[in-house]
Amino acid sequence: MHALSVVVLGFMVTTATAQVLSDLTTPLPLPRGSTLVIGFLGGWDSWKDPDRGVRKLALELREPSAGVYAEWISNHHQQLAMKLILDALDWNRNGRLDPEEKASARIILYGQSLGGGAVVAMARRLQALGIPILLTVQVDSVSRHDGVIPANVAEAANLFQHDGPPIMGRREIRAADPLRTRILGNFQYHYQSKKIDMSSASWRRRALGGAHTKMELDPQVWERVGDFIRGAIGSTETAGRPRPDGG
Image (tube, helix red, strand yellow):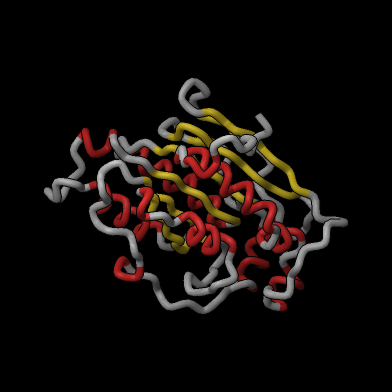
């Protein structure tokens, strides 16, 4: 991450009450066969902020009757996400994950800005535990170590802009093992002439975030992320619709 990006992200801090496990709605453990989707917020965004794209998408994706549970978590609270995942998969409630429980995991991770970096970091932590991931999606990901997708991820997508400065996302991701991970694509967005409604953004975001903020507020971005996620879930909602990668 560029030093200037760190400074700007620091100015975009939002004071937040710490999120805890009881703030989440996912039943623990999950019903067998369910899919757990976790979105990681960018910067120091408050998990209570109703205007964040990560939060809005999680709410749209929630469909307990179809076995889809979605949460949004601060990128600085990865331990909370790990606790959620471990408790969600512990179907026999014996306090540890058995090989069958790990193999049956249906997990999807997505995140924006620093949340994109958290996605890859969490995927690596789950790889160390032998837990597979259906899909990761990074949106204008900002991190030093978010470019290589670990082999426990089945599919991965990267959406980014390079119209900064000051903040520009990861241009390309690649698979640590191309035989095990399919990279759906690295999709660039352009905002030099694209009009985006920024009325919901704070003056800090509007003044300092530039195209990075525009991308976070771009509904087309989140529509595409949602399409990737629904495609990975296998929802009948997307049956017959074009794949997000144009295939």
